[in-house]
Amino acid sequence: MRSLVLAIDFDGTIVNERYPAIGHLKRHAKECINRLVADGHRIIINSCRAGCDEDRIRRFLDDHGIQYHAINCNLPDRIVLYQNDCRKVGADLYIDDKSLFANRTMCWPQIYDYVTAYAATVPTVLCIVGESGTGKTEAAAYLEQEYGIPMLRSCTDRPPRSPDEDGHTFLTPAEFDAIPDKIAYTEFGGYRYCCRPDDIKPRTTYVVTEDGYENLVRDADGRYTVVGIRMRRPPTLRVVPQDRIDRDADRFTLPAVCYRYVIENRWTDLDPLYDCLDTLVVDLFHLDRHLQWRADRPTHLISVR
Image (cartoon, rainbow, N blue to C red):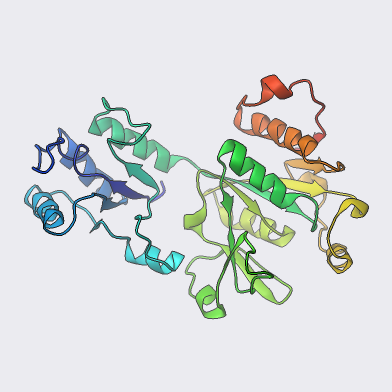
């Protein structure tokens, strides 16, 4: 089971809503929060209360024996990991009675069960592999926009090619060395690339080299389900500098059977590629979004395993 960071609201969630007074402790809140801590999760109390009001929260929790790791601040290791101490606390799950999707009738034992089930889920990483200009970034962006599958941004000690380059977390060599657990580690063009375990969500896409894909499969060790997606595109349709096409000529040697899916991206517009990705998502996650209005379109997805 994964260890999660949980941001838990105070008023209306741990105690009944009585602001500015502090309401009564909600039934089973103490037992469930302490069980979550015992299970290895870390708790940030995430409240709008500040100053003296924040001190009142601290005294209340301490007096009632409720365990926590921080109040209204990021955990030290997360600050180092992501190199910022942003105003919004970073967490894997946010538990708040005022969430848009909050179930006001949900009780603490149900919250505990949900967190436990979520933590037990084995994440799925969609590794998108292909030469430059085959549509990898467009595919990952579509999966993020249409299906909410976030794109994992690998860490690298390579400098950005342009001020607005996205897709990587750019680090100094010393910062890269300081990453404690590097997975999918690879070297290319004199620079190093890897991803961090905390960046992998229940469903994640990862645009990665062939070496990085192999290394992630090797490093997974049951922690992740790795799904390989090979993108192909004729050189005449790849709108990238010739030196990058020449560079890629000998980089990709794994046979098609090493991938779950192969997408032959032979089109001059993006819609057919999006059709393929819809089919892939339906096949992989048994989702039926888009099918009603895309069912009559041909698929060019080749499933090879």
